Image (tube, rainbow, N blue to C red; front, top):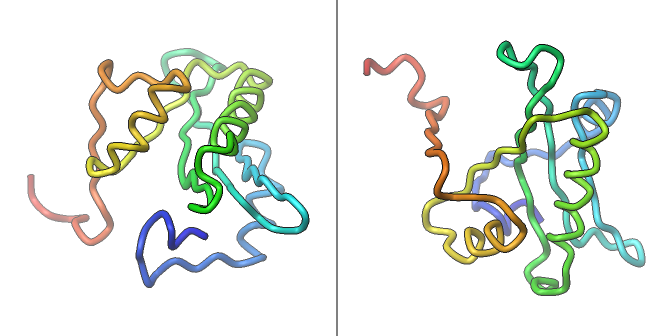
Length: 133
């Protein structure tokens, strides 16, 4: 299903990595499964924050819903669970990035309460590490 999110030959989902994530109290891999079929998933990671003592912030990654199930509330349900996860851990905020070309996703994120007009995200991929600024 992750290939529906991004076409990348390097995607490598392993049971051992999912087990590591499952055992990490600062990480949640949330899954929507109906009748034994995975219809959506999201990763949420908590990050320690130097500014707010023991109040972490959260980063959401890899939110994907099977295309055949778009519009059925699965993405909203996953993000509600992300919010519950974050509230139970006293998070100050939830952040996520979305590719600039995914306009429908941006509308969805705004619909569920994320703001795209407050901050600006920047990304530097591994292939660019070490490049001079």
